[in-house]
Image (cartoon, rainbow, N blue to C red; front, side, top):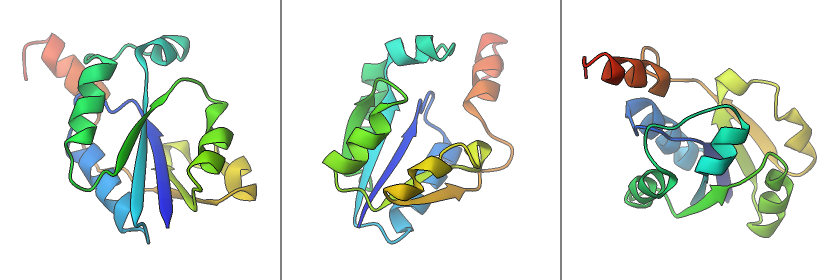
Amino acid sequence: MNIITYGTFDILHKGHINLLLKAKQYSGDYLIVAVSTDEFNQLKGKMAYESFEIRKAKLEALPFVDKVIAEKSWEQKFKDIEEYDVDIFVIGDDWKGKFDYLERFCDVVYLPRTPGISSSDLRKKMEAGLW
């Protein structure tokens, strides 16, 4: 089965790793990770600490990630599901209900976030010199 997930994956941390491992273990033989480009993050009003190239390279280095692609728009999810013959779309439960419309094309699974960790919190700590 092919699984896909999307995210910025800024300052790769335990929460990201947990999500990706759970995604891979969710009946998945092949895990595709779509990482938001810097340009797409700007459209979303987000600013990543690390560049797209660094975030992509870190994800590609993980042994349980099979393919990393660029996420350039909200609309590309339909194309990706079709192009990569995706069976399961996985995302953190902070997005619960937002991607239910994809259930016409594949299973949609919202996985629980790892408590007590987020990229936003890590960025704040870094800016304050606490990390």
